[in-house]
Image (cartoon, rainbow, N blue to C red; front, side, top):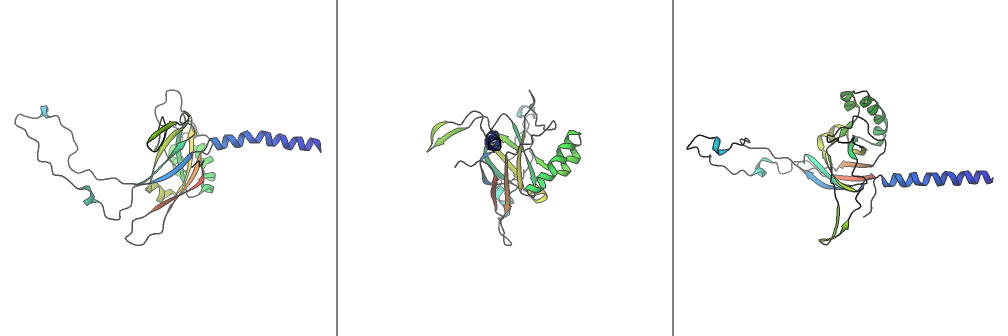
Amino acid sequence: MRRFIIMIMGVIFLSSPLLAEEEESLIINPKLKGGLGSLPFVGDTRSVRVDTMPPGWKPQKVTKVNYGDYIPPNAPPDALLIKGMVPDRTRRYVVAVTKDEAEFQKAFPEYKRLIAEGKYIEAGQVLHVCSSIGIATKVEGFSGGEKTGDIPEKVGSFFFEFNLLAFQDWGGCLTFLSYEPKPGDDVVDYGYGLSDTIHGVLMIEQQPIKEGERPEYSMRIIKAKVTR
């Protein structure tokens, strides 16, 4: 009996650091900040130096364009902006897009196997992974317009643009993954291996809309560290 109690205590003692490590690996305070739209480019976008033009050349009159005229009143955004913090800014992060957590758990092992074999096209058909997530190098705390101090150096803020075409095609379950870049690696390339650690899971949902209304979206936090 005494040996059994000691074994149970040992399991609890050994598992506590793992639980703490898992908590410390989660993204922090993710928030859906709103929609992002894209505006059409109008006119010639080429840049020409004046001194390369023949003598007597004058620029044509520029007509001001109201870009709002090109956007329908209830046009949906092209993407959603999600902001928050990552626990380790030295790593690089990507987001896997699925319909739910179960689909991710089923697809991820096959995706990693295909990536390891260099079958990138086939892997992309198994699991959609977004790399459009930026990590800031420094985060400062402010309150009432006054700086209150620096966030711990290892923490960084992230900015993720979730394209709504991916939402329509793949789903709204966002699973945050990461990898450690090779020394001197300035190119986003996770072909040499994503970590198995899940840094967060968010669910994007479109609210019911009536005909002619602008679509609205909400975000549900499934797995993240929320401090405020």
